[in-house]
Image 1 (tube, rainbow, N blue to C red):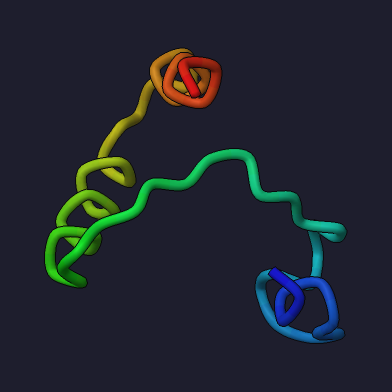
Image 2 (cartoon, rainbow, N blue to C red):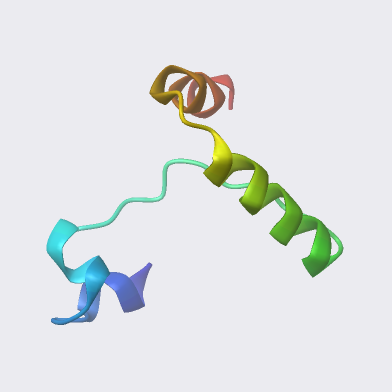
Amino acid sequence: MSRHNSSNKGFTSTGKPWQLKYFETFEQRSDALHREIQLKKWKSRDAILNLIEEK
């Protein structure tokens, strides 16, 4: 997060300051990448907001 908020160029620089709203932990990096791909395929804003509110 600090890298995103400190950079003055690139895609992430336009939406400052970034805030962490949700995270999950995994033992294996491959499991985390699979979960990330799954979440990025979600097109429903409501589904994503519901996931954030569950935590």
